[in-house]
Length: 115
Image 1 (cartoon, rainbow, N blue to C red):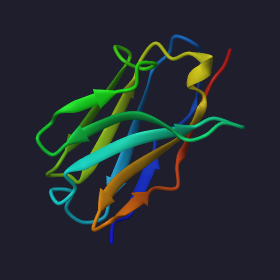
Image 2 (cartoon, one colour):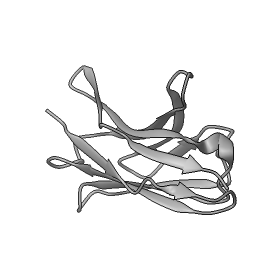
Image 3 (tube, rainbow, N blue to C red):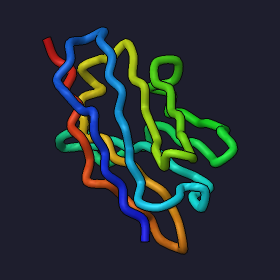
Image 4 (cartoon, rainbow, N blue to C red):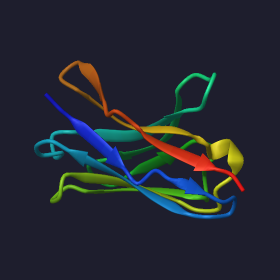
């Protein structure tokens, strides 16, 4: 079993920054791949960024060069640093990891970008 708790979502003005955190239950060394997804109102959940145990990363084109994903395996944490935020980044952001043949999700944290 894997459980995630996201935090750090907030209301921020366009151009601002936020750092999301994802706390995992148990060691995340077993999670070869961890990711952030987001879901905007009325839209499907979409991939944002992913990171492997070794630190290799991948980003959606829409966030490349603005967002940075990282993980601290010793603290069982994953992060998403979001800079130059745009109104279209408004969404609920979710932690995700595949493990043991199934997908695990957190409950999400709301990010709202608005003036």
